[in-house]
Length: 73
Image (cartoon, rainbow, N blue to C red; front, side, top):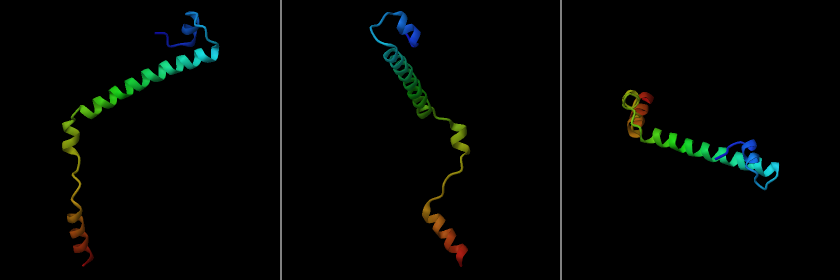
């Protein structure tokens, strides 16, 4: 698979330079999207325990409300 405009021109495709450039950009964009989706999938599936265990837990809203009520008295 040719990813550059020069590579597409050397294959002798019956397109002008604009179409060859767009074809090359489309191939590079497709490969970039596939790699990006793979990295995103790895991040979603990878369970990083040290990060999750050191994060501070968010308190429940009713707990926050009680603390604010006590602080306002």
